[in-house]
Image 1 (cartoon, helix red, strand yellow):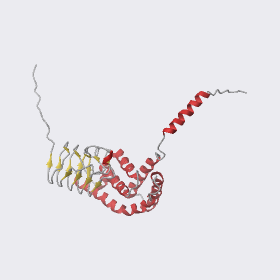
Image 2 (image 1 turned 90 degrees about the vertical axis):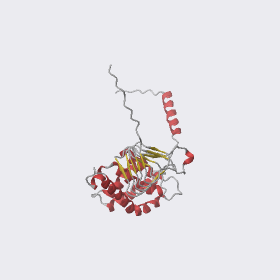
Image 3 (image 1 turned 120 degrees about the horizontal axis):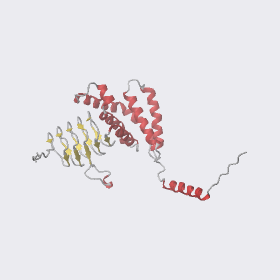
Image 4 (image 1 turned 120 degrees about the vertical axis):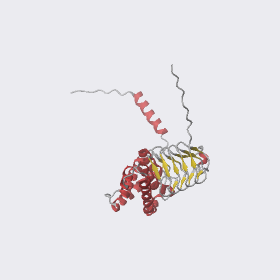
Length: 276
């Protein structure tokens, strides 16, 4: 018979308990449940596939999506006075219109990009299209006042595509983001119809302060504007007039009138080569 003797160090146990209790005291956010993030991502992927995948049946998936949305309500709606559970019926009623707008975005990409060989390629391959689609699906929930989930949806698309569109932005018909990566579109941005932007474009605020929470901080882009790569346009009062072209690497903090062409002129110097 073998007897195993275990020596417990009372001091070590007490110290361990003290550390655990200290950690518990510093966990001050009772509503911070990280499964909300995973649930929102699963809902986003499921919704996108239901709306666009030819092999995914719509009717039975809508029932599954409803169940997933109810889980989001339980996790995200901390204020009992907000009727989040009623959002779903209003949301699905608007899905046909949202889907129509997303399809128009895909058509705009296929029409404007000579590298696009088919409309199917746009849906399957274009990160800019995916980011726009998820933005549109999230924006309607944002408008309805559904908390946090719209931001989780667009942040999921941001992680996949490199395009950061706040769900509060207002974007019109036939929007086209080419190459996608590095695009930033702030919460109070207004983008009207038939706008095309390229990689690295920032539509941002001149400066950030918490007391500007309900102030328009980001620019307005009128109809038929093209903004080329790495242009930066800042400020809530900045308006880019319709039919304008903003060149690459331009920095703008003031409005430009309709039909403008704004370009960045590089400073080119020829270095002198001396023969030794």
